[in-house]
Length: 339
Image (tube, rainbow, N blue to C red; front, side, top):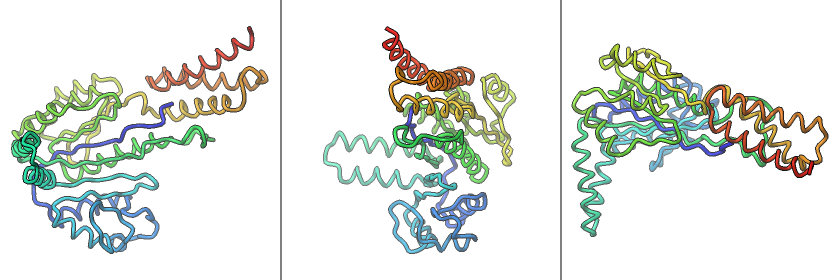
């Protein structure tokens, strides 16, 4: 099975506004109320006031003795990159409601770049940022998507796999952010084989800046997820979304809708798919199949078959590919035994 998954990233496009203490604390407090912690030891901070006084926070580029002091420092920076925890799952949230950090970075490069060609690249970046007014983007990021090391830590149960837990958690917290910040549009594309091209992303920025409806179906067609505010939700869009297999539509408290299209890789049955595969894999590590007793061989092949059949059932192409390869490897060894 694939042990390394790319990060999950959600993009929330909002109207540009000032980076104020009220707005920042509002978002963080809202997430905290729903169970998140801004330190890895959630049990220590039972109240919001205690959380603000925590010293074991993580905010990129800022050193302070308490979270409250660090948040105050971030206001002068104009943006924040903060880590939060959902149990043992780690997420990062980037807030830059003025596009200030990106603009300042481009301005610094323009000022110090001696190569004219490189300088022109950053000048064009600044021009793009001006085009994207009055829209800014927030990011919710999760890189904790790697499962157990199959060579050293075999799963003993069918408990939910880490990459599935972090995927479901990422979807949940994206919805919560949408409910609080009420973006103009939001999306992510967890499908590991697609990435939105930069020129297409710029078109999205310009559409939102002009108050036009984004091509939300485009993101759903990539097995992604998206949020549309209430005023952009049409009967035509809902009908088209419902035509997409495995698409679910949820109306959030804002009146907007959050649409999800599930790739087979993220199906709940993948817990069982992974478990059966790893149990078969564990057998293969325990000696050569040519010398196994019939009972052990039957058990191993049963695990492989179960993993493969479930993968086909839910459309998990990775699971089917891995199970088929393992079956082929076992068959070759058995053929040598019988020859």
